[in-house]
Image (cartoon, rainbow, N blue to C red):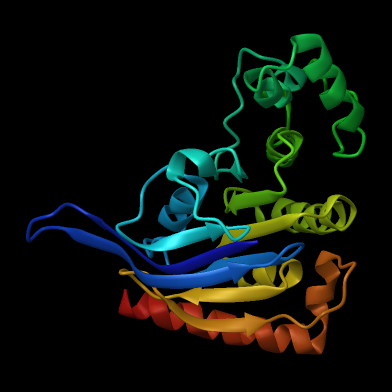
Length: 255
């Protein structure tokens, strides 16, 4: 469904130019959940921006369903959930969640009816008319995920969606995302710093080097689905987590 082939990205053109990505290749198949881990500043978010069509690569190509869409065309292919929840404080939770549908041209009433139907499934029932500041951090992230999901894109890009949360809430949200993914399906590429999160949620993990970011290793996560975050508590999963932690810590030392 998605192929990233030899993609590179640099900022600037003189001697002070920064090479953010170098010859990055990865694949995400139909129905797969893939994670991307690496040290801070290695270009993980830059890669998501290129895939989503928010920026142009300097080399390589991005193939979606066998085609090579332009950056503008890719904007309509992916649902993108950034690190921050990006909820507007002056809109209710329901108005925030339905905003993407309204931007697509769906009437306000229909958009909000569609969104409201999914509030129980996303753990937000009873909070439709609250303002974002009245929600916990975890609930805000669930609202953000619902807004992204409602766009109807078969492929989601998730940029450290739980990175700003405390450890307990993050664990709860990881379990929630695993269970939700079991229901809704689709394909996803998750950027994370957390090896436990990567193993708990994904089918395959790509490890990135320090800048310039490149893929240094690929790990298959051979655990059955449907899966919950508790799947990462098995002995085999712990071996993968320890290996990933060693890999990422080694890259951080060299960064």
